[in-house]
Length: 386
Length: 211
Image (cartoon, rainbow over all chains, first blue to last red; front, top):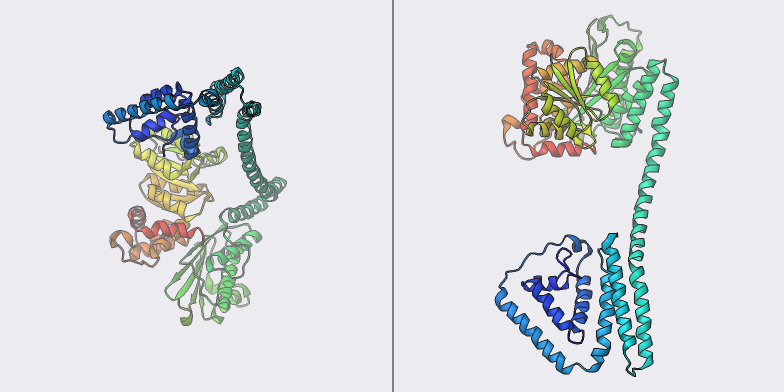
């Protein structure tokens, strides 16, 4: 099916479309249409019909950027064939066209062409749109005048019907582009509404979180520890919202997120920042083992936050073969592990004993002045091997 | 004096970074988006570009490839608040010599710039963790190029200590090797990260986002 080509057209692009389809020059088809138009207006009628059909067959998106691929052109004999066909049609029509066609079809052709000119689709405003509407009106009026000029005793009903049609056509052709545009505006409006809903959702969230925090930070400006804490909590919250890491519930978590969660609660209680790195994340630990490992890690982080004097703690967890290792490290003051008195519950109970109860172990590497590193090792049970 | 260009779309962040670096380096220019950054880098030819990962019209990877395409041989240090693995990996693969997060303090930042200026690699603990994760994932097919697709035992050890928060100096002491050796291990890992054609590497990074 030929497609209308908006690049190369005089009126509607029908002649160009046919020419392209047949692989001949557009001017030849145009001349044929003009010649046929002189015979009882048949050229105009055929043109209008072609326009209507091609317009339906041309997708909207293609009308503006469809680039025709010329078919293999053998114009010589095709030109001749087209000439013959046109000539034959003219001769046939000259002989057989009854007065009815001269009197009705010719004016009707004018009306239809006028409508089509006015109603072409690339009416994006500007001069060409005005010119089209004016041309359409002129054609439609011309058709109407041609009818009026007919002094034939035609059935009055038909005349008035055609008259009515001309009027209705005029209205439709003037109104149609606006109707189409209105539809487009509605679409556009709906899209805008979706966007503004989304914007409202985001600004509500920003208001509840970031703006509140900024206000709090302004109020606590003279307390740097509190300010840092607020900023950290907000950062974490925003990061979760953006990247969707579920650290808000400690149940049913994998090791990495569970450690993150523990770290965030230590950060909130003390003025430290904790960087958690987890490698080879696992979810095949027994829940009791995971709980113990997390609790011991958290205790180690809290100890580092309380005693080391460093405001930065690194937590590293890795699954290596059949065990999971967690390292909690600070670069603070350090201490001599042998010097811890037995009544200090922190390290002895919360970390070492807790790990031993579930078959793991805890080692504390530290020396005065060179920071502290707590190493936790949790063997994976054989039956939970993946 | 080492000449620095800062690229970040937030003037406030640029001011902060400039403040941290100004005493030790010569900050010769600032840019806020990819197009300006590339022009500035081509014009100024700095020694080091400190570049935010996310920019209004692209990423640090675009700045790096844009500058390289225009014949600039400068070193890049990526700086970001984003910890998403795919961002980190794509920037390193584009040619950055290091990646640190904006949470790093002034000393960390100065050290990192000095190190990349000397041609060494800079790993934040998180980047080291990503590297270990990416290279330790079980290979479905045998590595096409074991030289490039796997880390040596020593490289793994260095990465592991970096991930645990150790500084190069501390790693050297702990493994009883020289700092230079630690640096050359780190550079070797960076090269593998950039040149390895393991498909898993990019896919891994993408999967990582939804873990």
